[in-house]
Amino acid sequence: MTDAPVIGVLALQGDVREHLIALAAADAVARPVRRPEELAEVDGLVLPGGESTTISKLAVLFGVMEPLRARVRDGMPVYGTCAGMIMLADKILDPRSGQETVGGIDMIVRRNAFGRQNESFEAAVDVRGVDGDPVEGVFIRAPWVESVGAGAEVLAEHDGHIVAVRQG
Image (tube, rainbow, N blue to C red; front, top):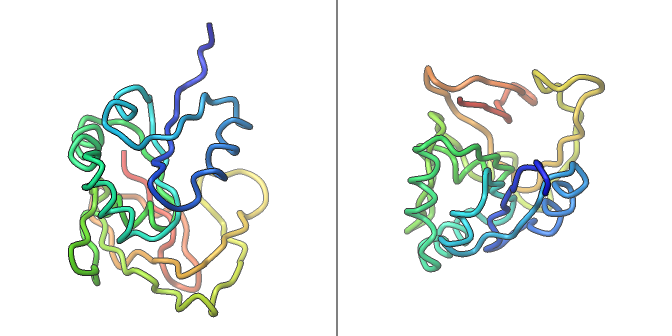
């Protein structure tokens, strides 16, 4: 029997494999999550990078959007990278038609804020609470946070734009 947390990765589209590997390397029990019954079996969840509109539409189609919103409201820990951050925002400044969010973080995000695919870049980012050297940030059609509400804490900025936030 292990005391390792069971951490799911929303496996609808995006960097699922990379997150499963990283979680396993951190001694978590990592599982892909596509359906509500799989969501019910995890202690926490990662919403990976990918295409936020596609992830949103597939979450609704697979019936996982409402159970996910309920788990987030009930306090389940969730970590979102890139598209995952967009999915955790309470509001998207420029949503695509039909795009929904899970919500849970009092922030407004702007999709593709750092530019198009061919404008992608990497940069060192100092993240509050992460000891050691800066984190190597990868910005591929990346969002930024336009604003945060009182419940959200800014953890990192790049070039004057908020790129990491925590709430709860």
